[in-house]
Figure (cartoon, rainbow, N blue to C red):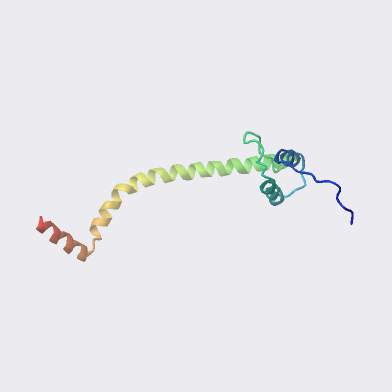
Length: 114
């Protein structure tokens, strides 16, 4: 085994620059390196990497799936919103009809004390 002649220090900027260039690390390995050396993630304004890469056919298929999911999410949110507004007034009535007899007795006794 060879003996080290000198020491070197790796800075967070060097790690960040190296991580931006490399494509061979897994997400977990990159996370460990960033945490170990204190390198922050790339710019928040940078575009996200595409799963399709250079494959246009796969990119089109993924875009189509994404559009379907967004449409379904909006439809679900739209259907959920009016239902909650309509159910809100009915909820207090249901609570009054299914009151506990013991609770009613206590409430009547407290009203008489006033």
